[in-house]
Length: 190
Image (cartoon, rainbow, N blue to C red):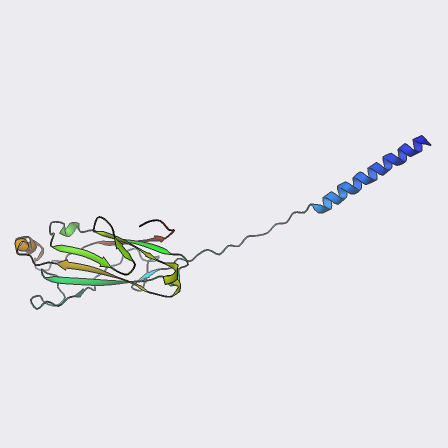
């Protein structure tokens, strides 16, 4: 009878082991799936031109401050010219940092020709020829257009008359390259 008890006990242990393993297997499960994360959009236009499609834009529609001694539409000593850049980021889902730099090498020997950028969102950098600004996510979502005025001022200073004459040759055009770089703003200091 002892032998039968041992067989019965062994059989009971096998059944219990099977039930425990089978129950544990029921508690284990694997699942798979696809994680879909929306990605922020980036769409910026400058004066109606999409900057993702165009890398080089010519800024030539300057508005000149009237001067009774200079014909309208010409940049000369005693004249200020302004170009308004309108940045439209309304389809953008991230805050934007922009950096503006002016290459004044064409007029570096003319200290009486100055450049200034102005806007509510812009800060001048230490070099005086570059500016940085931030367009907040609140400004973007409210649909605000960012207007940046680029101002060129040619002061009429007597001691520079001879030097100024070198720029004022018949049919001459003054080319001043302007670079605007846009990047996502992540909280870094300007």
